[in-house]
Amino acid sequence: MKRVGGILLAFLLIFLAVGCGKSGDEKVIVYLSSEEYRVEYFQKRLKEEFPHYEVVLEYLPTGTHAAKLEAEGLETECDISFELDYGYLGSLEKLFADLSAYDSSPYLAELVPDSGNYLPTLRNGGCIAINREILEQKELPVPDNYRDLLKPEYKGLISMPNPKASGTGYMFLKSLVNAWGEEEALAYFDALTSNILQYTSSGSGPVNALVQGEAAIGLAMTAQTVTEINRGVDLELYFFEEGSPYSLYGMAMIKGKETRPAVKEVFEFFKDSLVIEDKELFFPEKIFKERDFVLENYPVDILYADMSGDSPAEKARLLEKWDH
Image (tube, rainbow, N blue to C red):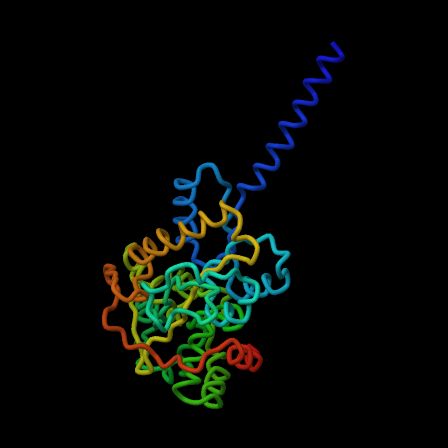
């Protein structure tokens, strides 16, 4: 009996060892900075596509996402980075696997990075989102321009993402630096701060504040605003004369992780399926040469702001001057 028990115990230990190894091989960790409703959609689709894998989606605001990857380096547990803006991706590209074997020809040429270490996922445009009900309650007009937001009657009614934590916040800062010059733009945000209810840690914060009735005006994401409108929330969106600021976002695999079949399969499912579905459902702004997407209530013929001159070094330099 002892001998039989010993044999069974040996088989059990072998089974557990193999099982643990298999579980580790089939776990894929994705750091991503997408909004909650999109993360939920991605998670549902990943479970459908990969029931045999454990795909962990770890949400992080873009600034935290980038800082975590920088701190962890190649020892990170992350396998795939999804939806970091190009400024951060460019500064971290030495951490990423070479993706030049993937066909980049479907994308707009200006969206394809020279390094070949990341691929486009979306263009995130910004707007001025309005909760008109709150403005009417306070007998206030809809603002016509950025200067109007400095009026004292809007004090505590404006929400904006913090540029140091959010790519959405940074794109508003950069767009006004390009439109007005750096000194004037920074002085503007110094003045605007007294009217800000909250500098949020994520790009979704302003729209959430409008939906919850905490703010009346948000420097916000167009896609998220439209999503809430299509859900029946009474919001409006506007573009000021400087145009819609925007950020470009992409995805990458951590160097060395691309050799794992599970990581490669999940990455390619994001690239070939989820990015497309995301355009159809949430973020239709153009990233492909020959493919367009139409979404109910989404603005067409958007006039974009001047976002030229952006780079990892420029972003770092401007954020060093942001102290709110």
